[in-house]
Length: 407
Length: 80
Image 1: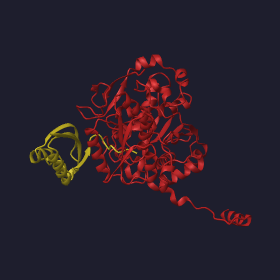
Image 2: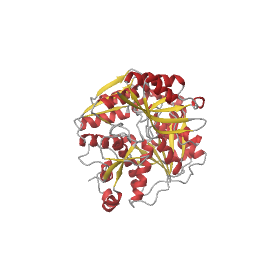
Image 3: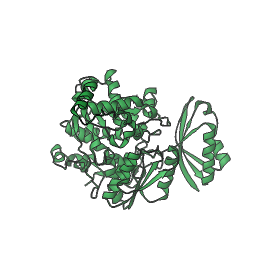
Image 4: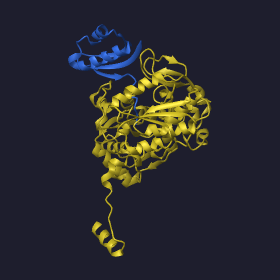
């Protein structure tokens, strides 16, 4: 059973029933799911959780789902000790949470699994989203599994690999011929007009909760403890806040010691409104027009930016922006040290790690977890110039000559 | 009648101008402020606009042309 009891406004505390609803009617702030933690604490134990399925659904009792979940095998992704990368960066206890290994190759499967489960519970027969790729693929895949219709809106400049990644699940794929702002405006109107479960609009409070499982898993995989530092990418800021919430909840439930984790936000320099606000000492996020190749985190007006900023501040963490060149270098370094091929957002995380370690913000001995949230193969365009094969004749002599030259 | 929830972000040079008042007067839009933070050198206001669709569109275009940034309150809907 679920211990979710209401939707609660993050700003003014106004409560609403558990319905498809995203914003507070009074102050227009985002709503989030609140739980009966007292009852939850009585029921949950480390042993009980560890005995669950090897997926995010081992934490089902901490999620707001009543009915049967829509699960395509998401979660419990590897937490890898990254000794080679750590040596390069000067970090002795570095771990990578490899969320590239989810069914549709990104962490989005976590929130979408919860959102589509709720959509079915609420009686929707159609789900929808607006996405530059990862969310689109995940929504389409979960809709296929749930026998629901999916409408997926994408901007006109989405990479072809990302389109294929969504189209394979046969959603209604709608390419919007307009600017990024046009897509935003259109989808807000569409969400108002149709009775659909719009994954990151009317289902957003539930969608958000799925991301907590990344935080739960990290703690469990570390032997039921929170790391000293977490570095995670931020687009809307939702994942970042929910990793923190996941750790915080585990402590509140008595499953881990009180959390003293420093949370660091990583953004692409061409779209870094949260980092800008952090550096300016501001509490308000000023939207920007995104301009970066790191499209999966290119969000100029982040819905949860304020809350991500608060987490970075209150946890004694920080914020770091990385330019496109550093992001590409980060993708290559991660692949060449740990064998993990991440998308550019993973490169941003590695670039941020490098800066934070070099500046001493993260100390060599601190147990640090970096969240790598999406896989690289769908966005190969950004790496086209790394393919430089040796061309040989089909003779040993030719091979030896080429290898000799290459060495 | 349509409703639109938006956030206005004001640059310093527009802080002293009665933009929201003028919006209501010129475009027959009812403006309903829900949250705001305005200081002497910058400010933002979250508000609900109510009126005919065309009037709201024209009003937003006018506000934008004055130099105010207009964003949906829910942030960007497009995600990665």
